[in-house]
Amino acid sequence: MSALEFARPASLAQALALHAPGGPAGDGSMWLAGGQSLLAAMKLGMASPARLVDLQDVPGLRDIGEQDQSLSIGAMATHAAVAASDLVKRWAPGLALLAGGIADEQVRQMGTLGGSLAHNDPAACWPAGVLAAGATLVTDQRQIAAADYFQGLYTTALRPGELILGVRFPRLQGLRYLKFEQPASRFALVGVAVARALDGSVRVAVTGLGLGVVRWPRAEQALSRDFSLQALQGLVTDDLQALADLHASADYRRHLAGVLAARCVSALGGGRLPPHAPLAPRQRPALVAQHCAETMPEDGFGDVQVLAAAPAQVWQTLLDASALQASIPGCESLVQTRADAYEATVKVGLGPLSVRFKSEVLLSDLRPPQSLTLVLRASAGAMGSGQGQARVRLEPLHGQTRLHWWVQVQLSGRLAQFGNRLVEATARKLAGEFFERMGQALSSGQASPSLQTAPWWRRLIRFFFPSSGK
Image 1 (cartoon, rainbow, N blue to C red):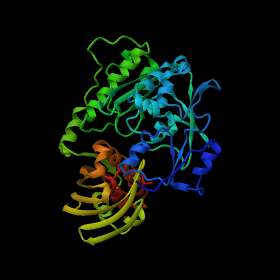
Image 2: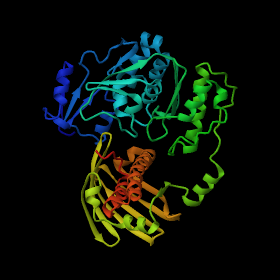
Image 3: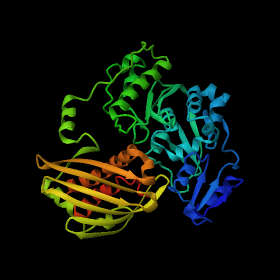
């Protein structure tokens, strides 16, 4: 056990004072709601708060009631309490069903609405229901629309120390959430929430795809025009970005999203599904499938990005290390040990995890300015280690560069607890950040080796250390 202080304030004012920057524990404090996610992370050594501020005794946070023509559910309301609430059943029966299907009875008796939303697990149920409902999160500082709150993998709009007080749900024509469960964890392999507003507009939210809860605009547009199963006939799911793991492929997850969306629509009165005839999405276009088969190995994962610079310029930026330390978030040191090798110490974090990694990157198979391979080895001490390789191929494209990248990684020790899908999700998220910054710099003509190189290495060094840059 790590040294830990524990506080159970009796009022909201006391709780906020204990957690405030410069307070008794300052930034080392963490809110404790139901503890179903935080305590598990602490047991694995992935979170080491200096103080837990337990919210169990703060009055008002468990209340469920009507307020300003909306349904108000307190952040400390347990899943079981929401599922059993007569008011919730009358106002939005779909929310009661959602809460009653989370995990098992023990978790439902302890887990809370606010805790689930603050953690924002990419396979959690509440984020899908809240996002589809168009709800508003009320904190001690402001009100946040659900569309602005969820910002990706374990990432939310919450500021440091900000506390969720409750959630307000508008009145709806109907809401339905269905999920296909991973049998052991009861988390959603894929979950879909469909909500129909009073004005007839429809919101569709999908969880379990791997990158956090997302809206499905294509389905929303089709159902807002015609709320029926016919509107979903032939609807492709290619616009949903999904990740694969040992439980399901990305294509299967997309297929499940289409099937579950149809079942939600049917449950909300949009038509009857024929027995044993799920709505299967169309396959990816043959050209895309052929392109992926030609450019990516069967295992691992990767993507393609177009950059506004010639391959020679992109190649030069990828190999320049002069500004890596200043550009990599959390980088404490970086040394080029020889022409084809680097060593770095990086402190990274994702959700509750904050760990310091010592990393070694080796360059091989250099074919300038066409392709290279990077071999990565990293150690996080007691947390475990990881190793992997990344392949990069540059292809000229009308004065620009089409960059293909592919990554394969293996984790050991406590790091392996995160699972391959979380590792892939982190890599894709960070890759997106990298290419956005690099593309902007190259297109503006202001790119320097410092700016261009760092994000690439940031992703390559961090892709198998789940990280949000905190």
